[in-house]
Length: 96
Length: 280
Ligand SMILES: NC(=O)c1ccc[n+]([C@@H]2O[C@H](COP(=O)([O-])OP(=O)(O)OC[C@H]3O[C@@H](n4cnc5c(N)ncnc54)[C@H](O)[C@@H]3O)[C@@H](O)[C@H]2O)c1
Image (cartoon, each protein chain N blue to C red):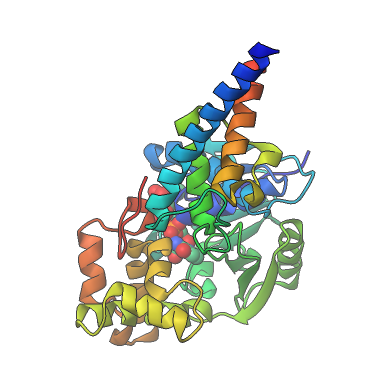
């Protein structure tokens, strides 16, 4: 029981670190502060080129590969959705 | 097994066209004379395929066609169609088309992706002028669903039917125009970009201001100078020279501001900077 709680705490710290690194990158693109739940497409930040740059950034920064069905714009709409994607792909990589 | 398509030139357009074909399940042999370009070409096609996927431009459930890279012209033998997307120099296209035409079987459609060299001029290089046609793919080919088809005076109905089938396979819609220097799109777009660069050179407005005006006031999707960077400034200058020579009009010659960029190696997106700076 205790272990689970600790793991969850560790996970959420790790998650927020992921989100922070992603938002730092997004902010260089947006040239402005960006909230973790801002819809980047609606804000006009997520152009098709920026989306591809995000894919390349996430892959190299977090040592994951984004392929197949995960390659869709919806996964890149907010910092939080990207962080969730990174976390999921890291977990599947760790399971494998 | 689907028959492969051979694409000559692994530059901006060759890799983009290869991506379009592969995404629709058609195997591609990509040929370039420069081994370094060829190595980069494979990486670039992979990146573009992922870009297409990301934007939902890849049909569902299609297994991507295989990509083979090659330095040998002879590898085009047996292709469904041959597409040339080599540099916009008539001599280079002439030499390549001569060689290809001597190798492929009658009935193989030869397609030029020239921006504006008349198809009938290129037809002088091939053994069967009726089998040569222009398909002016737009950049990036895997995202833009319309193409400009240039039918030469000697292009046959049978070739036009093959063009329709090929475009059907890759889900593109073609508008057929009569053969003329620059066809429709380059005749309109290239001088516009040249004039945009000229205005910046004259100090009338900055690069950003020209593009902002064209997007904000006139509904241009990206602005002419950002478009120029996507095209490649060297190709743009070459295409303008080719247009100017064939229209007998020096107004089409690339302006000094554009030529300065090319001389400085600032070729646009593909070199990391042009009118704008790009990362990575
Ligand atoms: N860039 C665009 O947006 C665009 C759009 C439509 C049409 N076009 C036309 O497409 C063609 C290619 O343009 P690009 O922008 O891709 O040029 P590019 O400079 O990016 O690439 C041209 C490639 O052709 C190769 N090449 C030259 N001679 C060759 C040969 N004999 N065999 C094999 N490869 C050869 C070069 O090594 C180079 O890699 C041109 O005719 C151009 O006018 C360009």
